Image (cartoon, rainbow, N blue to C red; front, side):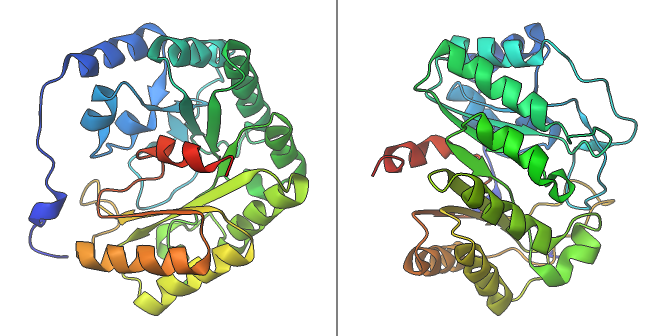
Length: 286
């Protein structure tokens, strides 16, 4: 593991009244965010911009990915008020682009797909023009579950491949690289007009040629948008950081992605799946 975090990964703390306002609203509406649960380094910035990535279906995940800081263990009952409360929060924050993600709920018959659909529908009741982006789990490859989400008409379906296939056994032991690619392909099969998005972390021990191959695989399934960021280990009990990737290398991957045909590529050390997600909104009708 590298000795210390380089300067380009150091985030300065700054006080902002919006941060406290967003935190109080989330507490009042009993809502979770991946910003807090996954200990995202951009949480301060995003809350200060009065935005957040809502995490539905509880705070406990049924998977055992070694990179993630979301709690694993005994799952919680699904909150039937959550779709309405998420919609209320979207309205209070006056969001034009909202990202909804979740823990993985392999214990539920549909993996939580129906709950995702309800959240999308409640948001659209507020304002049909709001861009809804969902960052979904793989639903164990269930086409019927995926169909529930697609039928609710989010604008963007995001599903992260996270890392290169060689590292899956140590990083995503309960996931499947092929299943993730198939999910993105199946979104297009169900609705060819729907935008798809994926993301990958660097610094887990991958090689450059493996990253390029992942980008190539994503374009083969017509993935539209890609995010590439630096992996930061949440604790000593998680997968270690093998390497801190220089910003110039991220720029190189961005150029490769754009040249491959991705409509949008965000590639920088602090980029995360939903970081500045609203930047893609201007591309959706082009």
